Every structure is written in structure tokens, then in C-alpha cells.
Length: 609
Ligand code: M6R
Figure 1 (spheres, rainbow, N blue to C red):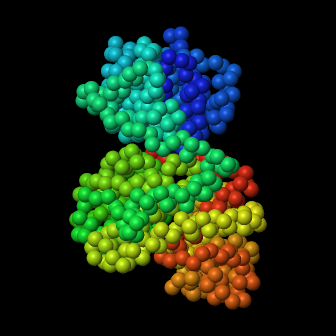
Figure 2 (figure 1 turned 120 degrees about the horizontal axis):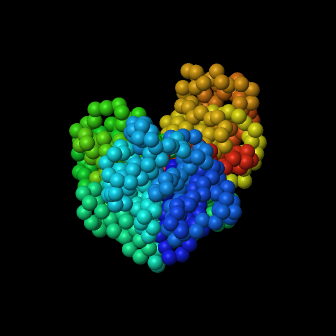
Figure 3 (figure 1 turned 180 degrees about the vertical axis):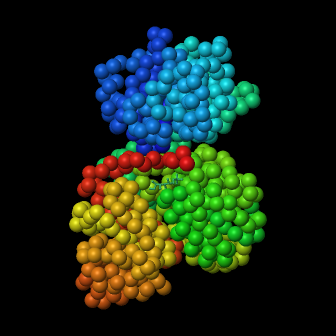
């Protein structure tokens, strides 16, 4: 999703802005640009495609100036071309924008009628022209920005340069995140903590309606009613080294390997290790009286919710619904009056999930968000939030955040189960024991990386595939298919194994690879029946199971490729079976030569509907 960086300094800023843009790359983008003020002029350089093209252009055209804004664009209004890349400028104003202006068409038509000529298809250019028109009436820079905010409808964060205020950077927040980071004699703005963490050890998040006037040695924030306000300064706790690739070729691979450590760290925040019981901070809800649980999320976070449904149902005896945020928010589903709704999100900024959260608050639901980014909008808008402590996840494909979400969801399910009397103390300890074994079991699975790499090698030419599973393995299968799709661009479908015969079986043909996830549990025999259906149609089965599972299929093992994982239970299975799927997707993508960390068209944090 679009990323903003800005800097006001005593030194030249363009090279630092470029570095800042590199830290925004992981969010996903298709073009980029930088604008500065120098010699009483706004100058800009923009480019379509990878940042290296912008870097090359900057080598040839120096961009002087001590104040500037930069942007990575993920196309919404207008195709990914240079003319649509930000910053958008007039002779007096430069603007970078993250979000969507919903009344763009109406405003654009009004401006065209007033004689304005547009040079892009973007909604952002509209903003640029409106600010300019207010400046032309004699309003101050601040008042022009405020007036523009009243005209536009939508979600936005803006970084703004105004030519007649050449020492002030303006930062505006109206629904999309934006923060200020300060260092010695220079102040930054950035879309997220990561973009600012290289330059500043503290961060101040703007609130909706805020406009900040930022100079190199100070800044002032005004709230929606134009009152000067203090916003909390938070320290940037996640160190930069955590976010570097180290020995790994890609962030995704690094993040896959970090899982044992970060899951252990995450669990240590919610488990009393000495006594093997939960230690969840006090929540502002009486968990013993909850009658319904709804889990709401998008993408991988939604699959984490589907996996967790089994835990919530089994441990709490409460009815559980799992909802895709973009569908749920418009469905107007009735909600139980004493219901708890849990929002799951790595970024905490996903627009649909955030809108669903606001909707649920309006309906009087109790709300908890499970997020990775602790100071995110979801965190701030819910009654309580439980951080997953995965550390910065840079690869667009979610890996460690997904498994850390599972860990926290399992803790919360156990907690509600013990609070409402569905689980005994003994059961709590048994499930906690199982959770604590997860980091070790993931390490064991990662030790088999070479085997998975070889498997991926054999599969490098596939064009389509199925992932099958039952129970919790069904969402694990969907997550596996999503990983493969998003980073290798191979068509993949995750399906409930028992449903296959109701349609997808028609797809089976000789050598079609079919991944089947099945630990030896109560669903194993049923899944083996489905496996037989696949073999009978000459498709090629890759079975993930444990030793007992493999032993149980006798001679059938000669007809399939089997991959043996550790023995698991209802808690540990989804974690263990997720790992090979992550590695398969990674190694197939590597062989295909795709952009693993920043796959085409995708954004790390989807802040538009
Ligand atoms: O930040 P969120 O967890 O709310 O993001 C939700 C999805 O956009 C995200 O999980 C997406 O599906 C990932 N690319 C999956 O790898």
C-alpha cells in the first residue's frame, strides 16, 4: 500500500528520502517519487516500477533542497504510470497521499469547470489543486490545508510542501496512518514505525483530524478543532537489526526461520512459564459471561481465525463465527448482545477489518484486536488488544505473523474456556504444555528444509495444484494455497478434502500435484479415502503426515510422495503443517524467479477497501 516519507533538515534531503522509500518498499508499490523545495521552486523526480529506476534518475538529475517528501505508490485511481506517481505538484504545492478520496470525481469536475488542467488520473492531484486554489485566495498554508480537508471525503494521510512556507513540512491525517519521528536538527514523517526506525528512536502518531506543522527543530500538532495538542511520544522498540535480512536471501525466508524464536517470545507474554498456566493481562471484559465469539479478518489472518475456531469451540463451548471482513462489514449480520468480536490483523491497519471493528463497536460488541503492530489503528480502536510480538514482518507474504497469531488465539481460547468453566485447571496446563512445545516442533520441521527444497525442485514447472485437508487442516490447506499463489503466481486452491468429490474432482488428471495435509487424528482415515480418490485418477499426491499416519497406509505409500512430520495434537498440528507449505511456496517462487518479498500487485498493508 502507498507509503509516505518526508524530511525537513539542515542538510540535503533527497538521498535520505530515497533510503526512507526503500524502507517502505515492503508495503508493495508500483511507482515512486520525491519532491523538494529549492531555490524557490518545487522540484520533483518520479519513476514507474522499482525504486532502482528512481535511484538511477536521481543520479542524473540532482534534487537539491533541505525539505522534501517521498512516496511509494500502489495504484488505486489511475494505472501504474509515471504520470500518476506521487508527489503531485502545482507551481505552489506538492502532495503525497496514502488513502482514497471518495468524492474525487465530483471535485475533479468542479476543478475542471474552474479551468484547472490535470496531468494525472489520480485523486491526489485533486487535493493538490484544491490547496492551491485556497492559497490563491490569500489563505495561509495551514488554513488552505484545513479548508481542503473539509472539502474531501475519504481516508487519507498527506505529506504537503507549500512553496511560500519553504521551511515547513505539513503532515495531515484523516484515516490513514502517519507519524512524526524526530532526530538531531531534523524531523521526519513516515507511514509506519519501520520507515522511521532508522532515523529516530521515538515516534509520535498523528490522530485523525490532526495537521502538523513540522520544522527541522520543532513541530506543532493541531487537532480537528485547530487546538494545539500534545500527542504521546513512543519509543521505537523494535531494533533495526531485526528488520535486516542477515544471511537470508529474502525477508520471507528469514521470517520463516524466525518462527521458533518469535513464537516462543510471543507465548512468553501470555504464559507463566514457571507454572505452565496462562498469564493474559487483565481484559476489560468479563470473559465468563460471553455468549458468542466472532473472529473477523482478511487473507492469512482470516485463515488463522478459521483454524482458531476449532480451539474456541472445543475449549469454550461457545458458538463461534469466522468472518471475512470485507463481506461482514456490509452484511449487517445481527450480533449477539453479549458477544465478543476479535479482530485479527498483522498490520492493524487493514481497511476492511478496521471498518468491521468500528461497525462492531457501534453495535455494542466487546472488541479485542490481535495485532502485530502495537500502535496501529486497530489497537487504538478496540477495547483491548493483544500483541502477537512477531517483530517487523517485511515479506508481503505473511509467515511468522500467521503462526504468532495462532499462538495468541490459542491462548485466548484457553483463557475464555477456563473463565467460563469449560476447561479444568488440568486441561489448561495440558494445552499450555502443548503450546510450549510448538517452537521446538517448528524447529524440527525447519530441519527438513532440504527435503522440502528437493520436493519444490521436482514441482517447479507446475501450473496448477490443489491443497486438501479436513478439520483444522482445511484452513491450513487454504493458507498453503494462498502462499503459493501470491509469491509464485501458480494457481492453487485449498479445499476441504471431503468436498472434493462435489466438484473439484473434475480437475484431477494425470500428474496434477495434490498436497494433502493429514496428521494421524480422528479425521485421518476419512482423509485417506479422499487420497485414494486422487490416486485413482492418476493425480500425484504429496502427503504430509506423521510416522503413524504413514505406517497406517501400508502399501499405498509406494504410490505417493510422503513427507513425515512430528506427531502433533489439536494445538500443535496447524503450526507444524503450515511450515512445509511456507517453504514449498518459497522454493517454487525462487525457482520461478518471482519477486518473493514484493510479489506483483500485492501490498503488505491493505489500507483501501
Ligand atoms: O495486516 P493484515 O493481517 O490485516 O492483512 C491481511 C491480509 O492482507 C494478509 O494476510 C494477506 O493476505 C497476506 N499477503 C497473506 O500472505
